[in-house]
Length: 219
Image: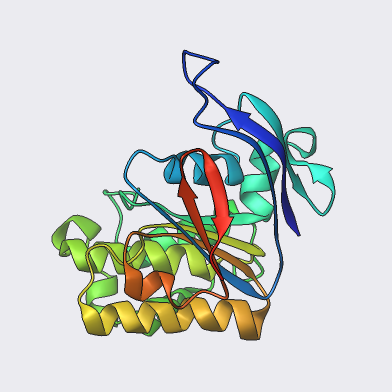
């Protein structure tokens, strides 16, 4: 279980916190979405959950252990996979090599398994022909699907996604949501999606709204 405990954060002015005394639990086998206006702190929260940044106060715990004490590098390698809004693909590699590199870095059970990497890309509509192209030769939507495939291919129990459907059409959005749904309900992962799209938010088991420094569970 991923836990946010007494989390507060501010930038320069401590008297104007982005949010304050946040306490939340994120359970396995559950799909969460976090919604809120631009600038409300959604992506900042995701960076804390991912171990990429540290809050001003409070803790992020995994199974009761502070991720900082566990070691943030180890946490990012073993426990969490991230779909970045800006993709963060290795632009000198092919799509399949991006996935294989993620498997190697995270020491996945599928490390070095090219067929597995190709299968994960195929689930998101990236054919073998596209998979062998340099990612810079792919469209924005195709790059986004490669980034999703890379995150979903690793063994991490927690999946974090920042606007993962932002550049996808309706059919591909539905396909991606079905995969996230399967990861939560069939594989048993904790899936947390930042989104501004009502279609995406509505698919969650738990929808959380961030507004006026408060996190509110909508359903």
